[in-house]
Length: 338
Image 1 (cartoon, rainbow, N blue to C red):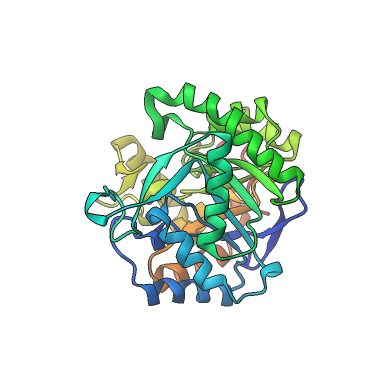
Image 2 (cartoon, rainbow, N blue to C red; image 1 turned 90 degrees about the horizontal axis):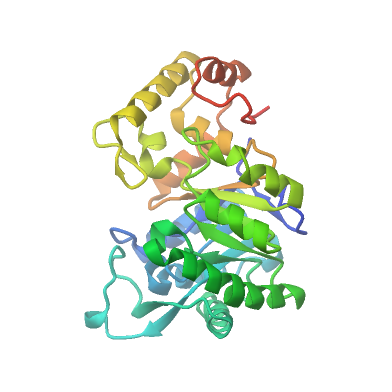
């Protein structure tokens, strides 16, 4: 499989590359990425054939969108697919008065949740202004999950299904965007959204991976039935499927518990027996599902980007997947690469 390989984006008249460029790192999450390094990564991804780019107002309080637009501005706009998100408005402010956590040296805007109809329309237009591009192709409602909103989530979800949904559905009907969806950390939220509204797509972070296949029970079958595309981010479960079961390995943004460390160690044993890098298996497994056209990977250095591209292209023998299933390390009904 090559980074430039493409897949149809569900029922929508779009094709995306099988690997997408995630821009949270260039929003300076945790530590800064220099301007020149950010642009170099965009150019390297483009040269490798990557043509799907995902950003959001949240990433670096607008910095990610600014950098994405800067690096893609002179590319043929019809040659790539761009997604961003709504659900937050950015308000200009003094840096000394803004809590940027966990972003470092971000843009001078404070973040405010807003899932209303008017707020969504304003946020959508503001994103296009920051990007300085004539359109985005895909727009997700961002972070209406329990992970982000806690006890407020049920009310937030109801508000978004009214305000955000109506705004994005109107924009889709008018041809301003081609696809609308939800981007969250929990498949259950995606599943409920798809049951309630006519969404085209979802961005699911970390819940369908080599370690987790629960979405196979209800959510992914419904996506296939409805023709909804699912883009997977966080496919390394925030670290451990890239680093392996090493000391300090992260699983879902926290130190990996013993049972996860043991499971990853057993997967690594199978990887070693077949000459397969663990991250290559993690990436290629995800896009084997017919509802998942693309794996979004975020990187903060060109070296990381190049490693991801190599892993995505690494040849994996069919008996590797057979052995994972025989050892109970992968669900029997999980689609695997052919």
